[in-house]
Length: 93
Image (tube, rainbow, N blue to C red; front, top):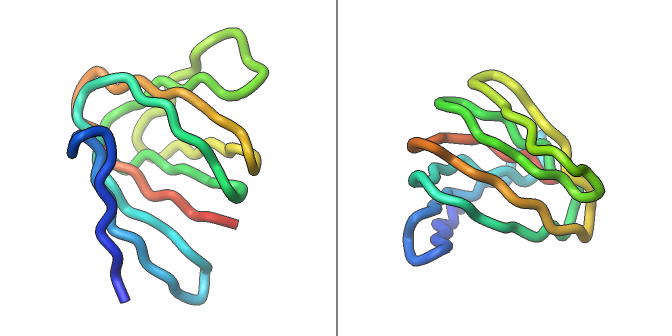
């Protein structure tokens, strides 16, 4: 069954699914700056656009472009900045 998620007053939306790869979301973000928390390890792949990411323990933001993936560890908070709309695929492991 698909589950629709909405965050930050509707500026971030995703659809969650479960399949043989595990649990994943496919989502979009409006331009803006956001902070997320994790309950599992997350592998986030940018599918359209680019996203600046500040991972826990890092001092500098890193930009991820279409096709690139970054990993976020379990039970941490991380920040992202989108200059324009961005789409992503997130796999929870």
